[in-house]
Image (tube, rainbow, N blue to C red):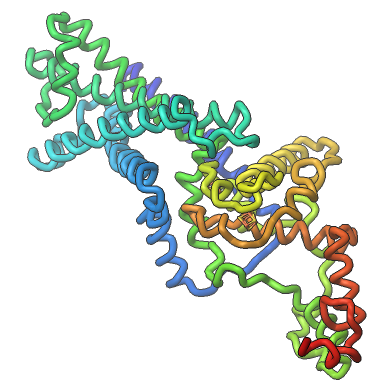
Length: 437
Ligand code: SF4
Ligand code: SF4
């Protein structure tokens, strides 16, 4: 094993170790959420995941972004097969190891396809950059898209462009070295795209070509390992978490809210003193320690998983009637705040630091929560079926049931329900007087 193979192995192991450590931290953060049972309907869940996350079925509702995203997604998944070859070559010092074990035609087909995908990914990234920075599409520039989310989105696109360029330059110089008969470069392969890059390197001597080929090879693999670690602190975590998020998504019809059984029983008794107070299962009847959610740990783990899965695409906010009419609410911000808060809370816990903040108040205000019409446009628009509304409803539940801090109009309605058995201010005894008017 040569020195370069040892360096490669060390870099690879360090990157993998960091990746596993940081991924485990995020999983531990998600587990800080309350329990919720999503083990039902496993066939429907698999179908949902394949349809929405693998099949990208909701992405094409916006055709331009959808098709570009599918190219990027396919490119990302398929070109990474090449990384297997790079890793084996890096560890064992071989050159284009797959060419030795795959039939010549198949290897040619693979490398040719990778090149075509690479150029498509590169073009898609350039168009995405233009949409964000030149066309300045509105949903990418709203208030919560402060400097880091914008930089994050741009960085990853630039990163992809560099990776794809490195891949094509690597192939271009490799093919030139093969043609010139340089030792070690003994594999011919199909290069439908990189052949058009070769003019830049024509006339260079073998040593320079080898240096460029090696540089791009190292750049490609270090870039991939760096990218893998970077996504853990980025919105691009969705490339991993979109799959569990769609699997564990709420499969009930949109608009079907979860009631607290203990509260339902109370209301039934209030509305009808003859109702059976034990109608619900005993386990469900016990009142919870706290109603609703004040902090991120009061949310359930699926909601926290949603928060880490959010791509910050803004389709939810763009469809939100409250946001469209100038209210403070942005469903994307609800998920971004939840993610930031659970990360902060978990970090403080790990470091033993005092934590006096909470999601409600320090991140999300009551004004934002009460601006929601609970229309579900956000959950319907989300390409990976995230559910900002469930977080809003849980936090409202806290405001109402723990703090009695509902807006005046709602408080009046609550007292009417309590006193009159209806949201209006007329007593139940007068009901027949006004019901036909
Ligand atoms: S449910 Fe609420 S947050 Fe979602 S789109 Fe409707 S108003 Fe906006
Ligand atoms: S919740 Fe969904 S639609 Fe909204 S920004 Fe996140 S990924 Fe996009």
